[in-house]
Image (cartoon, rainbow, N blue to C red; front, side, top):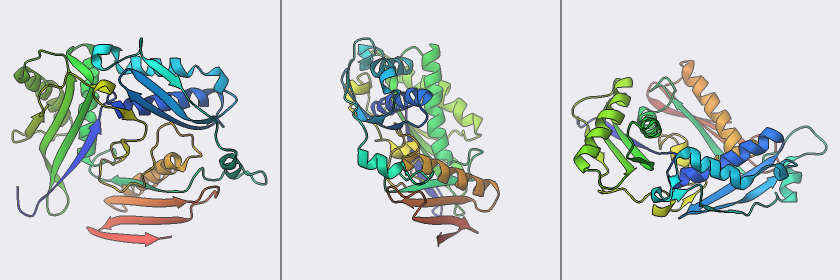
Length: 332
């Protein structure tokens, strides 16, 4: 590597990662509620451990009684691919506990203003949005590749083309940048993927590189013969899912946003309705950032928005952008 060059890395996790299972259950319950009551107030949290699912949080909605919380969780687990307890979780036999309560009346009164149509922010917080010109999706190339690798693995697992893959996985991609902050090549890739027992390591590594990683890299013209691969660097990865590690909603906030290339206020997205600015304001900040980069105003754009609970409008906005390769900040 040239001494003036830099490297940067992004991580992603699969749909079968314990924290992502929790996120998807929380979001599935939110979706079912919103289908019947678009004004519902939802903050759903999930814990997954061993073959146990605990669903908690707060829901205020007339539709709550019409939703089968446990069945929604089971179907989510099934769709991910946890159909056998040997994988670390089984939708058929999992114990599911519904411990959902109601939203605090104090928060409800702060959000729903009686004297105005404005909706107050559901909590205080700082929220970030980001975009850059490295990809057509205005995302860092390391982040996009780490996600695409896991999506390809999931597709091949579910189609049966690679039958010995199991749902749990994590990826990591390192990109080398030149002195002008332009991405020039993939430096290394880490992929840890759960698998059936007794799969020879050399076969596993070759299959993952040839059938999963290379097609993704070629789709973005990022493949070369000098990439370092770390495929299941710890050895066997048979025990996975919630049997290998406990999962919680909101614990993969960096993998959910920009893979470490932008700052984060700490609030998660999953399981939250639009009155929770952790989610809705993050989407708007991303929308604004993406349009600024798409318009050619800047090669990268980061927006910070701050809210106070019960107040409809932001209490501060800060923009950080690269103009002629110099960082520039402006506060509003």
